[in-house]
Amino acid sequence: MVGIAAIVIVTHLTDILTEAKSYNVPMKLVAETVDGLLTSPGKTSEHLTRLDNLDKWARTDYEHAQIDTAREQITRAHSASKAVDPLEKLAAYYRSETERVDNQILLIHQRMVIGLIIITADSILLFLILISLVRRWLFNPMMDIEERLARIAAGDFQSQAAPDDGAEIADLYVSLDKISAQVKELTERVAKTENLAVVGEGCSHTLHSVRSLLNSIRALAQHEGGSKHADPDTRTAFTFITATAIKLEGWVRDVLGITHLSAPKLVSQQLEPMIRDTLSLLKPAFSEGKIEVEYRSADGLPTVSFDRCLFEQALIAVLHNAIDASPHGGHIVISTVAESNGTVTMCVEDEGAGMNLETKRRVFDPFFTTRKDAVGLGLTVARRIIALHHGNIEIESDPDKGTRVRLNIPVG
Image (tube, rainbow, N blue to C red; front, side):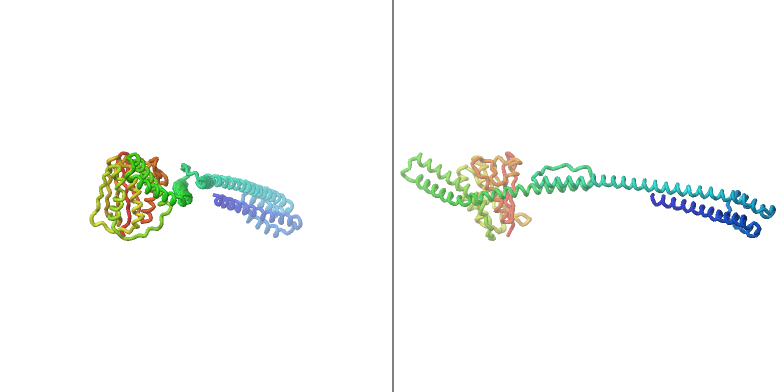
């Protein structure tokens, strides 16, 4: 737009300058002719030659009329002085036209200055508008995002609605929500890891001694309770002491297990012998709760690479949870199956009360338990052991529908 206006102005100015030239040249010729008439009135041929040249520049009837009048005064009246009058009028005409052209040039100059001022003002206004829009569409969202990142760094993971500033900003806020969720998860994991580190550092040095003392108490109670000289009340008391020592030893075992898990020594072997040995080991616990145990072994089960001692610890933790959840006289099913994805799944299913959503979400958290007399480390230890075997644990449970725990480990 500015370029078009500049072209129009330049074209108009060129026309005016051309017109000014058309007045300046004849005005000079008029002055020379008048000067010649006054200084050399007898040189008629020279005067006529100048009038002929002047007539070539004439463009209007008025100019031609004044030149013809001056020519007649020279040729017919032979009066050079009378020829000066029409030429003076012609000179006055040229001066007025030249002044008019100068005024036009001055007007164009004024308009150009005003135009430049308007263009400059418009440019400044446009710049301010662009700055405002950029600030609204870019700087403000970036400052909001910076503030959001600062809150995330400070531990505030609350989600925030994206402003209506375009799809790109909305996508950034979605990404920030994802980052916030991941940072929150990592923060929680770090907190859990720190808790475990504190537990390991503060308890591991004393638990071994406690475990030895519990073994001594249990051995003494079993010995004294089995003595033929003990009366029934004494036998009952020592039986209670023995059961309590066994329970305390289990808690100690869980804590030591979560703080001293070493790299597994993987050996390719069958799961069934380990499962049957574990069931035999827990037979007293099954009998105490009148719990029926059913083991369903799949035919042609492939070998699996696992550390028997560690894996047995994980299975014991899962079975203890199933025993605790089962009602008196309940039923627990242990089954194995080879999956098509190259893993073997061992499933432990009980008929307990099941889990709600909150319990399922936190079931692997260290020290989380729904029982008052439990430590809450059994499934935490089990998951870590299965992870060391490059497998995973899956839990399916609903309120009043029991729980199914699947231990998946790769074939090897």
